[in-house]
Structure formats: C-alpha cells, structure tokens
Image (cartoon, rainbow, N blue to C red; front, side):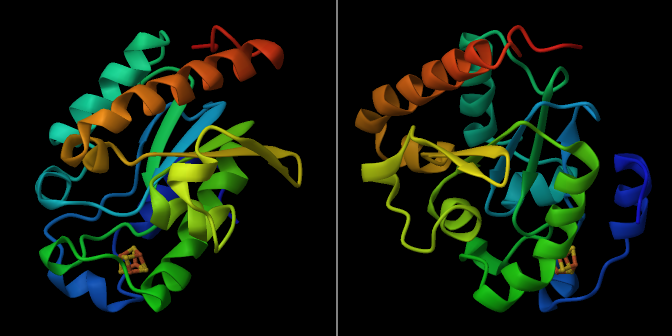
Length: 192
Ligand code: SF4
C-alpha cells in the first residue's frame, strides 16, 4: 500500500516484472497533479517519452496539450497523465496482452492513490483494457460510462489523430464533452 503518488513512483522506478524492462531508456511512470480529478491513460511510451521519461512529450503530446488548453486544463493542474504500460515496447509496437496485464498493477495503484473522478482513455488499447474489451473508438468515443463510481470515457489517441486529421473535430468534441461533464459534477474549473 502506497500513501502518495511519489512513493508509488519510487517503488515502480526499478520495475522489471515484464520483458519491456530490458528495452527501456527510462521508465515512464506518469506526470501531473497528485490531486488530479481527471486521469488520462494512453497505451505506452514512444521514442520521445522513453528518452525523456515523461508521457506524451512528442508531437502527439503537443496535440494533447492543445486539447487540454482548449478547455482550460493543463497537465500540472487537476490532471494526471499515465499509460497502460510504463516502458516503451520495441519499435513502438502495441503492448502485448501479458505485458498490459502485468503492468496494470501499477496503474491500479495510481488510480487507488489518485482517486480520479473521471478517467479518459486515449486510444483503443487503453479503452479496451479499462472500459470494454470490444470498445470501438470510432463508434463509442465521447460516451461516459460509470464503472464503480468512476466515470470512464474513451477518445482518439493523439498519435492516431496526427495520422488521420479529419478525426480531430470528433476528438475536440470529446474534450468539450469532458468539460461539460466536469461542470455537471461541480469540478470545473479544476482545483489547483
Ligand atoms: S512495462 Fe510495467 S511491468 Fe513491465 S517492466 Fe515496465 S513498469 Fe514493469
């Protein structure tokens, strides 16, 4: 049991519980506000994230930051950003099911310590792992589902939006829906 996100991060730092440990430059635990109401979850670190040890720092991270800024959020205030797996899969392949299952223990602890009100899954891998194994992002994005008292929503992964710009409008609508949901919950603007 860890009492703080910092203690949890320190415990995770040397993790070698799955094969992804051997290929990492840096473990990418997560970043953001220890009192976050909103947790964003992607699938895993890419090259830039592995190099810098922080999630969503490459071009897709810049796009995520733009969407956050559009609804007056940022990664330092009220928001935490993490991934299903904390170490970069080789050649940016999808994290394999057993790697996801092993690493999920860290994400579960992050959720237990942070106790976010809303979890936003960025992309198919995270949404299928956390919301529904059959989740289809193109059909179900932007829908909020209550799972044991935590609202869950899936939207497009920013990297997918960079590959397919016409979907950016739908993703933007999802962020507006997130803002509206936070207002409805009395959480907006998010506390610092
Ligand atoms: S991906 Fe997760 S479980 Fe695997 S070594 Fe990294 S932190 Fe540990």
